[in-house]
Length: 476
Ligand code: ADP
Ligand code: F6P
View 1 (cartoon, rainbow, N blue to C red):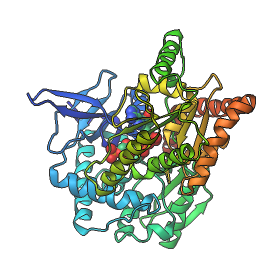
View 2: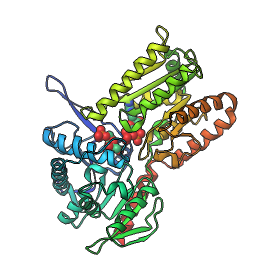
View 3: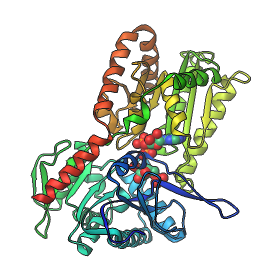
View 4: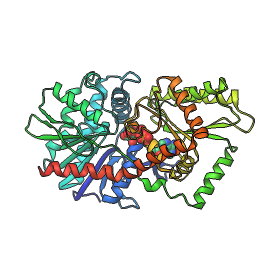
């Protein structure tokens, strides 16, 4: 079905849907986790392109097929060894911790590097098979950093963009990587390389200078004003393109939706303050630290367990990797301990769900939450913060947001905190609660500004800015 006739191809490690196979062999698809999929799905619906990616389970590669929205999905097969070496190993136990500023120590393993190279080569074969002559190919994220370089060799007719969905570390940290030169060469196969923040893009330019590549111009946001000259005489544009959300999914609360919000509050026992956390269960997200802050506030009496409820929704993620297992058990132990100490019968003070929930329910929870806790140690952007602000055209609620989330650049009206400092998390949470009680107009004005910022800087703006820059780079 997917011949070499697609003018616009997105390639990401994951397809927007994961394959599930029931014991009787029946196959179904469910939405796959993470911000990349949340952001790119609406873009693909508009552009009607082809999406090349892995179906989320090893040893499966169903035939290409069209989604109901008219997106052509082209599955790539990863076998068990690829899954372990490329996905769990190099992508998520080497690059992920390195790019998130060493929250846990990265593991450097030569076999994983070989697996990463091999899988990038395989993705290149698949893309070369589906991309039309002169097509635009948009490569996504840290799992596929070699792909632009391989594609450039294989298909010089293509226009190639690359976007990194996670932070890019300082040149000092990055230089730990034994295969640092190869990855940079891979990235420089692109015509444009995009990062969330100007600081990420500047880190990349610093690295290029260290490698004695000529760099010109300064980084800007949503346009390309900085370039790196490659040894083969090409010019690669580098810029910041802060990702965002499809705002329509999080607005328009009609009477039925508002009744759903009221019902949820009643289901939770009508607490005075509902505090919410929504994350993949990842050690970068600071879920344990926010629970510990909440626990200490209950212990000291600063928060009354009869008045507050914390709802933590945690999507299962990368469950076989050691640090993810450890984080899950620490989080679940803390939830049990806090409930054991402070809940009344039938009225838990922490509601914890370790699963994905439907977007329609998620948006009701966002609307319901008086305080949203987004406390990552490091995060490329964090779409949850933006989704919460989008849900509050009512100007209600407060966002406690880590200084180390990319979203903090765009949402300085949030109650910012330093998640490495538990006192800071406690302070921000209490200040938010107190602000809502004592200075509702001030908090409402802050929420109005955040809501407006998200509504006017949505995912369409992100994709348009990136793809226009790519077109412009190619024209030049
Ligand atoms: P990341 O890409 O690291 O997972 P983001 O905050 O940028 O982090 O994006 C997470 C996305 O996944 C958001 O769109 C959010 O709505 C969604 N999400 C997170 N947790 C859940 C959950 N438990 N159920 C459903 N969607 C979730
Ligand atoms: O943006 C970070 C990211 O790794 C994305 O590539 C992905 O959509 C998301 O987090 C979820 O990760 P995984 O695909 O490993 O479940």
